[in-house]
Image (cartoon, rainbow, N blue to C red; front, side, top):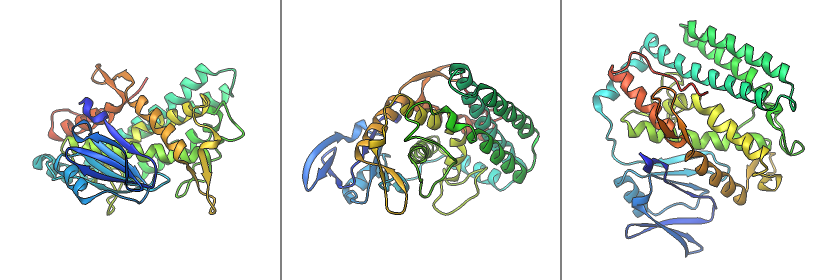
Length: 343
C-alpha cells in the first residue's frame, strides 16, 4: 500500500520524459537532468505540453503506473492507464446502481455528509485554535448552520434537493474562508470561489490542490476495481472522472483547503511564487509548484487514525481506504458506505 505514495512530479514545462531500460529519464533540451527507477513509482504527473515518449507510455501502461498530463496551471489534460483489470462483477454492480436513483442517492448522500461534516470541523477547529485572531462568534454561527445542513442532508431522498443542500453548505463554508487566512493578507485573500481560470493566489492553489486530489482518487478507484468515470453524485460526462469527483468531496476541506491555509499561514508559499497572465488568470510559477508539491508529498505521509477502521494510515492512503470501503459496500460486505468523518 505504501507504494501508492510514490509519485514523480515534473513541474517544469520544458522537460521531456523518456524510457531507458527500467528507468524514466527526464530531459531538458535533450540533456539528462534526472532519472528514477520505474519500480519505485506508482504515478508520474507532468506539467506543461512537452510530453513523453511512446516507449515510456507503453512501459507505464504495462506496469500500471499512472502517467498524467497537466497544463502549466495544473488543469488535468489526460492520463495513460494500462489494461482495465477491475472486477467485472463489481463494475456491473456499480453501473446498475448508477442507473437507479433511489440506490444512487444513498451513496451520494454519504459523500455529501462527509463533505459538510469535515467543512464544519475545519471551522470548529479554527474557532478553537485562533479564537482571538478571528470573529469566533461568526465562525460559530456558520458552524451551526452547517450542523443544520447535516440534519437536512440525512433526511434528503431527492437528488436535486441534495445538490441544492450541498451548494448551500458550500456557500456558508466559503463565506468565512477568508477569515482563516491569518498571514500575508495583502497577497492572499478569498472573496469567493473562482476557477477556469482562477483569478487570485488562493483560488489558484485551491484549484491545483483539487486537481491533485482528484487524480489520487481516480487512481485509488482503479486500484480497487471500480470505474472512476461512473459516479453516483456527479453525472456522467465524457472524459470526466465522475466517481473520483464524488469520492474527493469528503476530502476537499480537510486535505486540500487546510493544506492551502497551512502553506499561507506558515509562509511556505509567498506572493513571489505566482504569475498573473494577460487574461487575469493566476498560476503558480515553477518554483511555486516545486514548493507546493514538496509540501504535498510530506502531507501525504503524515499518519492519522482512520475513524472507521480505527487503524493508523498515512493521509495519502485515506482516499484508497475510502475507495476500498466503497467497493466493499457495493459487493454487499457492508450495510452502508461509511463517510470519512474526521475529528
